[in-house]
Image 1: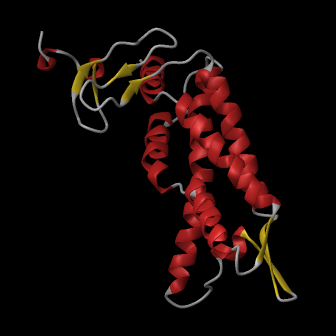
Image 2: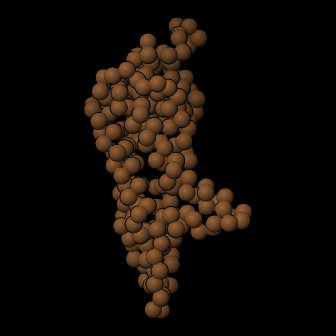
Length: 209
């Protein structure tokens, strides 16, 4: 039987190299990997839904809390200053650089928050064995499309690298928001590791059929 004889829902394409395979759910703990580029295609995990929801809620709490605490403090020759994430995002309040401030705020705060809310919206009924909420498939597709634009962890890593470079010029202190974003980097990695996109799509298709 060729791929053209199979229904679309029985096929899976590698997101990296577009290789096409016949989809089959592996056993819990096993992974389906692309033979061409070794990208993980399907990776079901036991009780992954509950873990993802817990990690997603943690990310939501960390991002929102980080807005209200200092990100860093700088001491130079008797002068001191501290900045929060919102101070950084609103550094340019007028002119053409206002667009840069808005884009920065969106990528490090608004888009990550929106992604987490969408994931909760999709996964909560699945984990509770309830019918999916309205437009759940659109919500999950949007959460995946926003993934490259959610750069909270990139912001944290970039700030850490920049602060190391200026450490010789000033006394740098890391505020609570910095450590919250550092924890966020690790949690987002685990969240993406547990989230099996194919399993979520199959759950939505099964519940809608």
